[in-house]
Amino acid sequence: MRFLPANRVAELSLDEQAIYRQLDPARLPQHVAIIMDGNGRWAGKRSLKRFLGHQQGAESVQYVVETASRINLPWLTLYAFSLENNLRRPKTEVNFLMRLLRSYLINNVQRMNDNNVRITYIGRTHELPAEVQEKMHWAAEATAHNNGTVLTLALNYGARSELVDAIQALAREAACKNFSLEHISEEDLRRHLYTAHMPDPDLVVRTSGEFRVSNFLLWQMAYSEIYVTERLWPDFRGIHLLEAIADYQRRERRYGGLNKLQESDEAPVPDSFLVPR
Ligand code: FPP
Image 1 (cartoon, rainbow, N blue to C red):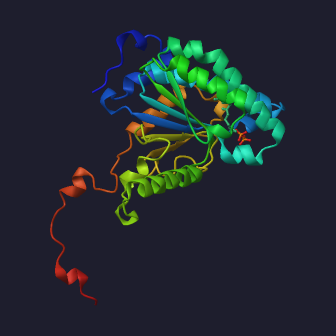
Image 2 (image 1 turned 180 degrees about the vertical axis):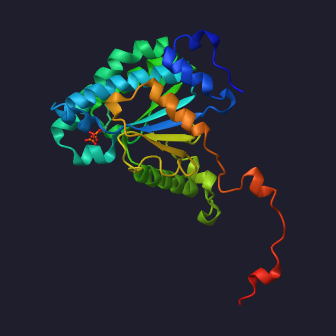
Image 3 (image 1 turned 45 degrees about the horizontal axis):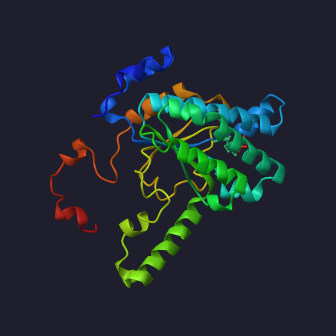
């Protein structure tokens, strides 16, 4: 059982504390992943340019990261920039998102350190602009000593390309170690995913009311609980993360099995049941 370090409870707002107190500390998720959506709509509703929605979205990121660290959430993964965003959005928007990411890192490393947060990345990050990669590397190094929440930004990420990268790596390993492809197991493929070092997400949150997974962590979310909220990402705060966790704790996770009540219903099925009438 993980307990919240006493000195950090008081750092939650009173509203957050009220929700946190309803949670079962023994059943907190280990890993929450978030599809941050709705920046453009948030701006549009206010007759603002889309980039201002992204800018406000970056503010939400830091609020949510801080609440995650205060409740001692081990893993938080945020879908910040997809491969498809990179390919299909106008160059001006992509350039703005890259500048925003860079300034987010420069401005928030100190706060990450204050909150014992370590930052890492998944995705084809080697295709990002060199000056962005340089700051990503710097932020990862500057927070590497922290042992609290691991914040993973999915950048230039796509789940299908992750699977292609994993299969290629596995094929190289198979050739090198001379093992036969017939013997490949799920575990062999899992070892080559970008997320090999982390548990699968227990909870996937999507903002802005869309019921889509948008090529995010397709392998890893096989048994994740999914929580969709109408709230647009720039309006999402730590309290909404806690609400999502409260909802998650009301779910029953069965991983394809049965619940206790169903398991106890073990009477054998009579053969007559199978005879065609
Ligand atoms: C979706 O909004 C969100 C994104 C394209 C990426 C998320 C980016 C941020 C939250 C800001 C920067 C992040 C960091 C880590 C600094 P959308 O434009 O698709 O919204 P829409 O569907 O309403 O148009």
